[in-house]
Length: 585
Image (cartoon, rainbow, N blue to C red; front, side, top):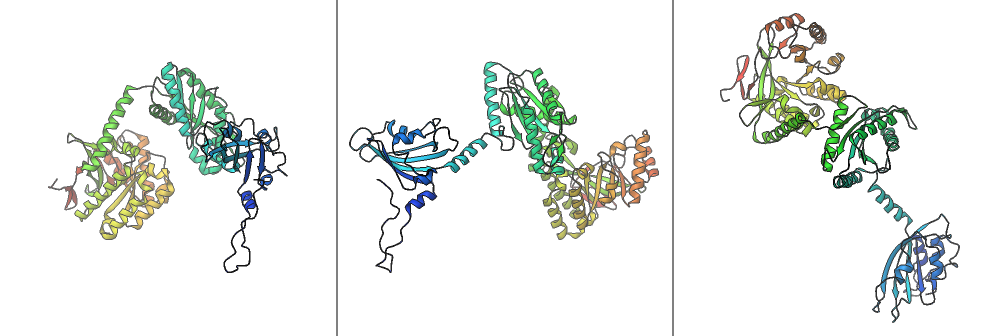
């Protein structure tokens, strides 16, 4: 084959018997897809190319590639494979139909030492022509630089994080697993640390995601500069880095953490748009002493990080075993299992505690309080299971249960006025509001007898979401109370701006009111301000008449606590102006 024909004869075009049909430009097609055809006569080493080969290789001509030896001379010496090796060094035998081959290698078309590289995919078939050794071959070479670069990029991303260039989570954990295995076999100490950028959400909001990414990459680079040979760093999650320290005793881990803190704090992180001061919190665990599996190592490093952040920004905490903490975990695990079962088998109950008028001592409304029925028939208060339910992601399910129970109680007791507690997660839950809207659309009388209580902490978590939630509840005809007021950091201004109907003073300010002048000053100021905004005031945890006398003096409207009524289980019915336990219960 001296040359691939550029035109191929074909039958006349339909309806025009005397004219030659238009035929494809084969060489042109091959060029557009980056391919050239060759025939190699192995016995005399003669190599013949299609007419477009020069264009494919980016050469003015292929006169210098007329033999197999010429072609082999421009193969990158670092290439493991070559056409010569694929054809001549194989063990396959030609039984008359030829032997196929496919190989990928790199060409230096401008000669050794050139910087231009072509990644070539070479596929063809060789023939022995009756002998035992290859006598001739023909095939196609394709330039696959773009595909190769994509494949290399995918291979890189399978192990490395695109933003930082360091290990991605999967490869980091695989490396941790290997190192942990070696440490156990060799009885050497290693450490795993999780580093979190403090206040990363605020950086995102203040400067934008692009700047936040640049900050994260800069922090990773500073910490990488403090690692020794053999240590590893990778992106553990969105704002966290994982660090593997080899041959690291507990004292070494503390010293390393201090180096990381200093490296991050040494100066502001400068980006093209801003300069940001950054600190990090670090949690670490010594291995295999305190964890013998990857999952255990991650859990204990995360736990240590959580404890570090609980003490403020820029701290380091190393994992240390604690019998008290282990006992608490066992209790939490048992309670969580019990909680999941209780939701399914009806052991989650609504109790109702009266909120009474301070003068008449008659119930103004009743607060619906969740109780968990234990296996022994006793009831656990909400404080024993709500926090763990939030951590387990069960709280929205529990709030939906509460809503259904309160709405049913309102429907069964036409004179009842009830309040329901919702979590911070539910404040942002459009589905909960939809459930409420559907219910009051069918029974408009329910809304006017419902009070929705949200805690101060839920309000300050996201003021915009809280404002939307309160406005929607008001639009549906219900009232809203801010619960546990004073326990968080909300300003008095929020009482008016968020349009609360009722403020419930946190019981911590009430239980020692008679003895604390500071608590008295707070309650008096809050009550006066609330009345200025036409907001009713409820005092929680009221236990004695001495406290009641002070609350009257300060202008508090309503009382709630053991003095005026314990919480009682439902179902409920109305009797006169007092809500009482139904005989059925």
